[in-house]
Length: 339
Image (tube, rainbow, N blue to C red; front, side, top):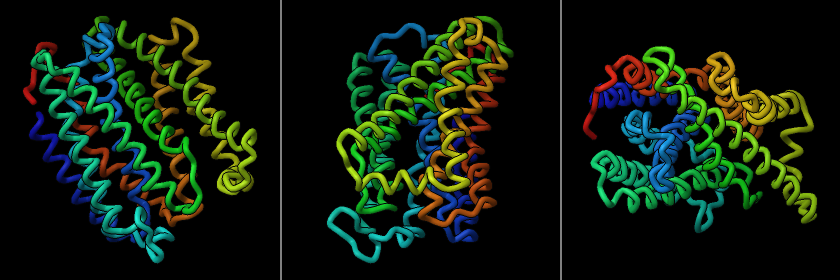
């Protein structure tokens, strides 16, 4: 199965490259952010559970480890994006020591590749119940946080250079964990429906984590605005105003808050809701949609995005994940796969 995931990954990259050459804009970036966040967030979730000795994840942890092959896609897909689109950034014509096309490409490719390598070492140690599992889990988590922060600062925030935000990077790695939790909930739900009630507890725990991360996400959002207001930082206002004062960004921003916070938080409060297939599925879909729309809001006002090619890139890069999810659901309960 693992080899087939790599084959689907290669096909996805070839399709993404073709679409990128046809589009000629930043349409690859939202899809790249989304399909990078999910596997990195899932492995980070498993690593955090190992570090905290969480027993709640035991029944599904081995399946979460199977997302490892998806981590080889982000570094290659980023190269496709960086080699074609650094000219979209204003700093391309006026580079600095940090924001310079070659250094931009090398450091981000390096961090993405290092994330895959550390994930491989962590997963191998965890499956073998090695005493070094915690060691590699710590290093993976540190690299995961750094990589996701770099995505926020380099890939997205630098579109608005010299605008800066000290909380921007934190949004990205927290949202990657949030997507990881949502994907774990989706996998648990499908396994529950197909293989029985042994996955009910992990589904309930996933619902509780969705509740917690929805609140955490809202707290971060509020902290950003509180910092601007309380610190009296007018330089940060223009970025926010550009994305909330005019239609359709106003309506889309409201949708993001509803999808990422209000509805998942309220919906997951009742105990029964956490194991309700319809409510959990609705929460997962809303979290996915909220994340995608949020990234479009970040990017579209300052970089060209084609709705058609953006949607096609999401489908292309999602092929390996769709195949993997299908195989995880259909395989026998006792099936094991080596790293």
